[in-house]
Length: 191
Image (tube, rainbow, N blue to C red):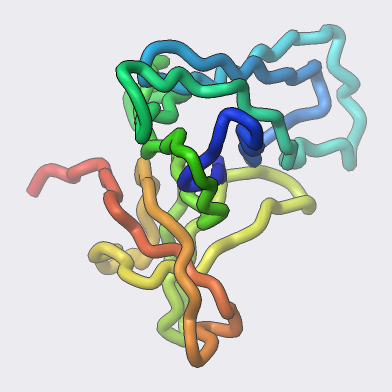
């Protein structure tokens, strides 16, 4: 997910949601604001029967949703935690996780914050990338990571991440904006 760092009541902003999709159902989202909380909840409706045709594969979605006006609580500035239900890799339990904060204030800041479940990987040129795990030919965007965690000998990890975009000058791995990770929670492997 991607969202603005700071919004106002007059300009509540939008949140971008990117993820794996499939051809066998309908996916919608509900975005709601509560006391110091902004929830992004998917609703997948399975539409059987699924076509069993060769060549039909799952893809990814990329959607932009309006944010509701955030609660100001006792006054401004006020922060709301951005949360979403996710499967707790590798255990497959559905849990609600926080991925960062959006602030409501008197002036907006359109700097972009990002968070979610991502695949972190390194390429042969030494670039570190974060991307949404998706299947099929239509892959979502990948982001250059400014400060990657140790990706181990395999050079790839699945992680819950949160961060913000910063300018890269000169461009890094061909990108002028890179993702600075504020946290990356990687599943520990036993020794």
